[in-house]
Length: 379
Image (cartoon, rainbow, N blue to C red):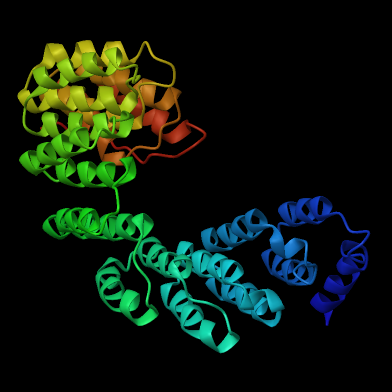
């Protein structure tokens, strides 16, 4: 009774007749609402307005908030409530709900909604098929993508398009089914579908990232033959591949090529080169590239420190490691406590007790995260 009273009082001024209601003011009220249970009630009430139901962005933001709070029961409540509106017979509206379920990791709810479409005289076309595949990937049900891809196109009398193939390729790469992913590239071209940059980048990231360097090179060559220019994601994938193969000199040459093609290297590019020199045991080059990345806005980032700090400790440069840790604290990076403890242990072993105590103190007193660092006893 108490809560329902609050809801009634809140709605008395929250929702006016559609002709006089500002969707912007309703959205602002929803964004300001901190009580998630009340948010659910307000959202359902707002959905009574046809104009509100056209605002896909509001739906996405609200569901994202609930998913972040792990309120999956309430996600189901607001999305199932949408079925009572005539919009549910329109494929575009249903596709939105399928996608929202997928982004919340609720694949089986998405699949149930897809299966119910014929009952509502709602067409199942390539649009809803692709939404279901996307829900699979977003819900990390990668293995189901292959099954759906084989069965549904024939059942629905549709032809997969580029989005379908790209989604399947992404799923296969996530599962490590790289041969199947490459075969899918062959299949789409056989069916007269032209791959795009997303297709190749998905394959390049998967192959180079998992150490299948030669396969990655083959895909790189196929991309160039298709007259698709690599972008920053393409180059970064190849840089990672080169670093893993200890071909850092070639990676540096590739960085120069990027500049000539007006593709600006970013922190990921520099991290790949730094990691390459770490893999090769080249301390001086790793330090030089760390200094180089430091000259760029927004860099180095968290990943840079995760690469450099353990290597610096391994090489016995504890003074530099200490300075890097202070930089981590200064920039409020959230790193694993083991990274910082590694430096504390090294400092103690080198009898640098002042620096070790300083890091322990910083771990206890910094405002964004408390790190429980300990001073080991020296035998």
